[in-house]
Length: 318
Ligand SMILES: Cc1ncc(COP(=O)(O)O)c(C=O)c1O
Image (cartoon, rainbow, N blue to C red; front, side):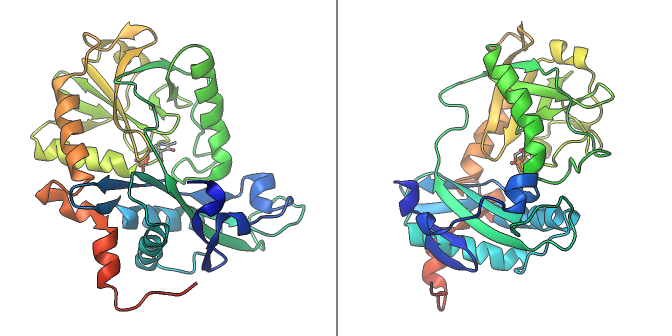
């Protein structure tokens, strides 16, 4: 599928990707004044159904990010879910997808600020395979780049401009032969990956940095915490020191794009025995089923696109 042929949502209606243009001086492009979400859709071939994972939670977070950036989202999270369902239906996706809703300062003008600048909203949904390719486990390194501190920019918001921090760390990791970076916060504690939250297993408990460690509070992080609690795995949210990474028995990243992704080594030291541990596997197995609507307990995590679209009394027209 060519990008130009995708149907996207922009300027309050559905249109071809090729027709949805932004100008060179767009504020969001020049100053990084935008915020976005990354939502996954999973295809179930047997049921011929596309399941969108936690779309409402993503739109709630988008509303929060937009508020921090002094932007207005016209539609409520529930209305945005409906638009997303319709967008997927119009694209007739029959495979795994990634959905990218974003709000950006759309005025074409010079002048860096947040207030008194117009904004715009758009959604692009596109076919998407695995974020880390075929890797079964990742070689991670601790980055020399520190995670953005909330006193400098809102770490809790998914802001486009802040992703320069992730890009610096990610490129450094890749160019040095690793698969992913782990960023420390300014006080030297583990924060997260370049686009994922971090978990490790220590003394039988699942440990993850708490919300004050400049993390993005991930939707997948919350899913994993729920699964762990339901599996009876003790869970601790606390500050993690760098040297603890070297003695963890298991470690993994979580993210909408990455899913539950095992970490094989950190700074060239194998995590545990370097193989995927049983806690990671147990959580990843439940997660993989849940995202395709196969776990009765977590059925409300997913929104079925085609079933829902056929039930709708009427559809918005382009
Ligand atoms: C910086 C950062 N941290 C964490 C995450 C994981 O968040 P989620 O599970 O909501 O995708 C992401 C991905 O969105 C991210 O970009």
